[in-house]
Image 1 (tube, helix red, strand yellow):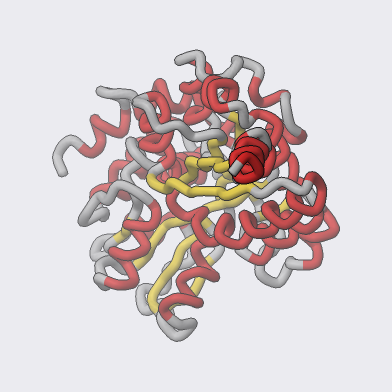
Image 2 (cartoon, one colour):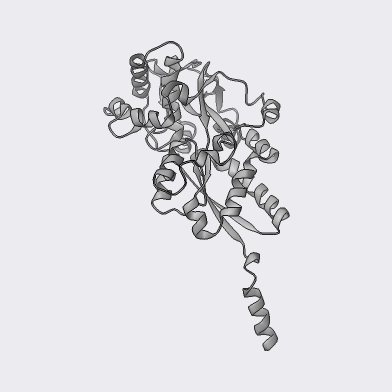
Length: 327
């Protein structure tokens, strides 16, 4: 009996053997990447430390995910598609203000851009942003107020006018016409994909580049074609540990390692496979057939910063509300 009690006490004294669980709060269209990345990290961490780790995912519109963390979702890390959704966590004191300096490339391990997905054969002959405002063209875009996907689409459209020599007044008129062609406003990027491909609504879907391979895999390559507009926007995909959560749970070390490993060649390769643009230039070059060189402009070039864009365009009563109020 004493031996049984001793064995039980010994087991209770070995907390290191218990499996650690992390929660990654991420944006809508990152699901498939993290489905492949998470097992890679689990194996890496086991080989390095002997410790087991289980990783849970939470997905939704990027801004909605940030709000969920603020409202109590205990995410150890956030992997978002726009900096303002990490900045708001800093404003609420979940993370430090200098979060972007903690990892390379301003804590952006890979990037993306916005492309057009059209029905097979491109019946409406859509090739550039101007084609999206033509009469009779139905455009599917996620809600810029709740989705980073939609926000980048809006900014890409506005910026396409500015980078072609237009002024803000012309850009506003253009984006007003564009959203006049949006028949339904869904909350996130994955909802937009479902609306376009499964519900067969719209002539063109404006979405992240990494949706291309996913849609072809899930629905068949005979369903859609991808169109790369002559100019588009560079979408940063920032990541951060949620300090307030990891310090409470005691998971800081493993949470930091989870994000650091995103920069490893193995993880960068997986990113490229999922049409995310890796920071590793050699891997990016290797995948140039699916990630072709493009003319891209940054948010900072046209709008000053994502925070400035948010205040002007997407805050309550901002340009987007004024443009879309009649819908």
